[in-house]
Image (cartoon, rainbow, N blue to C red; front, side, top):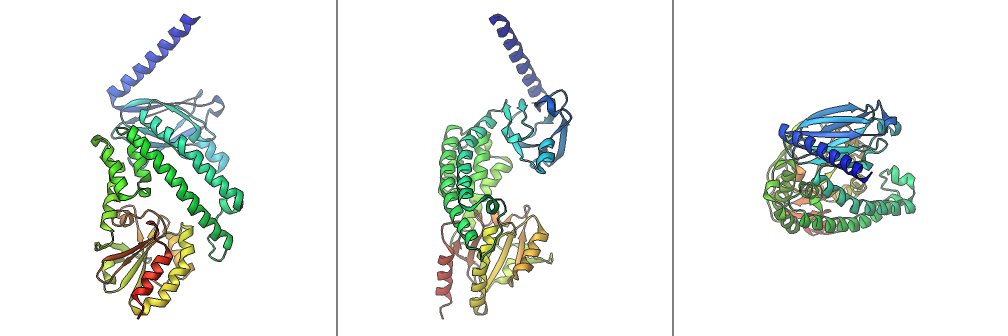
Length: 389
């Protein structure tokens, strides 16, 4: 019996090795999927926005489904389940890292794809190991907040600047999230030092680069293998590093043009000659709404003295953006950023919303508040000193 089992194992390994060899020879990535047979007839969907691939799907037949893609670059393919989409009216996307032509084995949990098991990608193994260390800490943080504030407020947070409970939730979240990020940063640094040639290290650093100080980010990026430093993930890190340097105190803001709510192009230089507080925000950002009353007060105090606020929104829903501007009755100019221009990242490396950047009449950055530990109180004191006469 032992000899039979060994023979079967040898045949299985030989088959896997042959499939991988064929994939490498053809230059393809093959996702060989399995699922419980009770999901026969359901679909697994695949997409890759980085490669500009449209959504595609494969039907589960006899507990099996397959995707085949030509390998062009190291990337992360995303998947979701038709069953979960129907059952929950939504889905949890699940990503798999691939960095060379190969066969990836995908045992799909159709009720929640993030619980699926994947083998065949060493980079994905590194990514999953990192997630296994950090996700329980994130869950513990959210469980603690839910226990204190209730699931209704946690599941449906409605920005209400007059609601003391909402303000307390934001304060507690910021504190706990800060502690969680410190843990993530430490875990990621260890991961990168132990896996400096892994594509996963590049992806994870791109996803988390905004949480590191500039010197630490440059140190960790320098550890990565030179062969990794190409493509969109590397560009994201390099844009963040460049944006931080461009937006350092004492730097002059390079002129840029973005559209206003009427879809008209507006140059930042049109505000030259005034003290300008750039407010990086979005309609989707609860804390941004909480901060608006303070901005209104500043505008009322100093606008007639040569002070202006410029709202610069990172936004995918333009209708929601315009609706919020009108609802909040914001009297200052507004611009909308896009993934193409990406001024918020490439020029300012914004790491937290809201963040405000103070620019003097000559276009020189003299203050930054929000994502660097400086508070609204620090900002208000600096403005009071400027306009004390």
